[in-house]
Amino acid sequence: MMSKKRKKTDDYTLLELKLETARELGLVEKIKEVGWAGLTAEETGKIGGLITRKIKAVNKKKLEYP
Image (tube, rainbow, N blue to C red):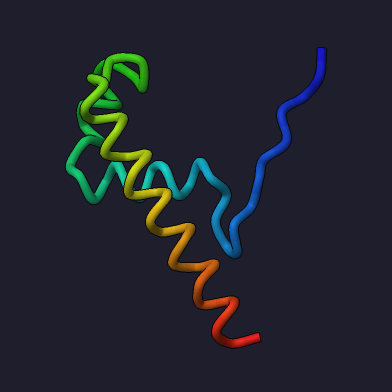
């Protein structure tokens, strides 16, 4: 079985970024109670959308200041 590699975006692993975003949305307690699988599609979509915005912002800054 292949091991999963953790992808990094600057100082964050994607899991850290996911947890930070969930914390910003106030979903950490729900995740502790029911786990990631217990989130609704709307909640996971919000997390994914915010993560995408954050990654794009980081990449844009990299392009502006080489």
